[in-house]
Image (cartoon, rainbow, N blue to C red; front, side, top):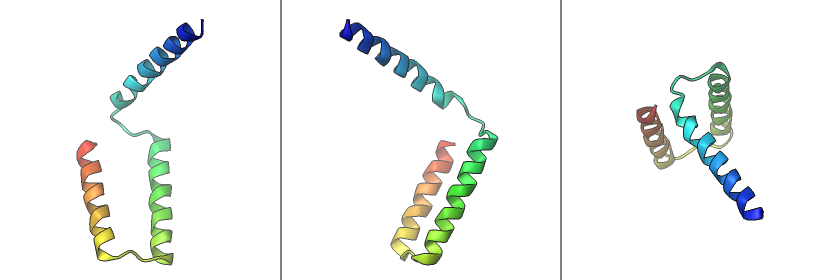
Length: 69
């Protein structure tokens, strides 16, 4: 009985996860969350400035994320 329940849960998890990448447009909540993340990152940078290598790495990460979107 436990194996059947585990397989059902696994199948449900896969089905729900597979549908997530299908949403291409960002909703209001996601945009607001990104703005909050950006603001928090700026506050962290003001308190603890990053070096040039870390800044370059973040620019690369952002470029890769933009390509994915």
